[in-house]
Amino acid sequence: MIPRPPSRRPDYARVVAWDDEQLQRISRVRLRTPSLATGVVGRPSDLGNRGQRPVEVLDGEGELRDGQRVTVRFPFRFLLADILMVEVLAHARQWQVYAKGLGLLDPGIYGS
Image (cartoon, rainbow, N blue to C red):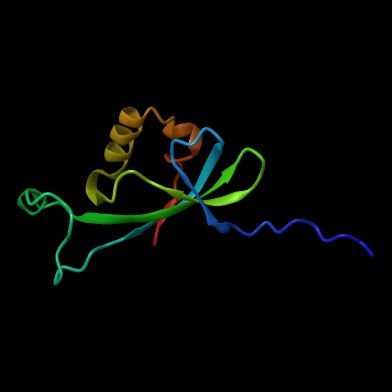
């Protein structure tokens, strides 16, 4: 009997932080626009005063150095849609994460 190749589907049970040393690449960041009716929970109240649209960062998909696909957890929950890349880079500097190397600056990585 021929052995089956290992599954290439993400192991959603395995969650790693975005600053994990074994994380090689982030392939997708899932975002959601909060409902205007319910408001934004957990975000500073000055957000609405600036008139910028917030987006909620749900999670991400990534790949470890050994090829295993995993769910990626981020240390931030909300970003401003109008300056998304600026905020991602600010968080990356704070956490000492190489955003470009992980693929966080690639087009099409952010979506719902």
